[in-house]
Image 1 (tube, rainbow, N blue to C red):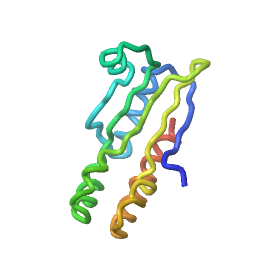
Image 2: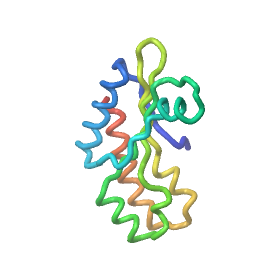
Image 3: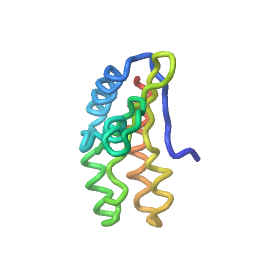
Length: 128
């Protein structure tokens, strides 16, 4: 089982961020964090890196339900979605597969929640 699903799109980087943000909202997610890897690599290591952002997405009802079933699950939240510039003017969007992540947690009660989040994230990626 892969730990992510992805799609390449013919949009520039900023357009891709906008599209992903809109698609996440449509599926009930909010973005809790946004990490600009390019800027951090320049700041911390003084190296050049391609456009790459990590969006920490959260579906509040699912997060609440998961936290009710496993109080340490916050260590695996939020669900990360990456957007990165690729060659030929393409951008790649990839999202973590929560079901794959939950395999490390020995709590079968989380599987139903993870499946729901997985389907929402898959819809986001496929909709681009």
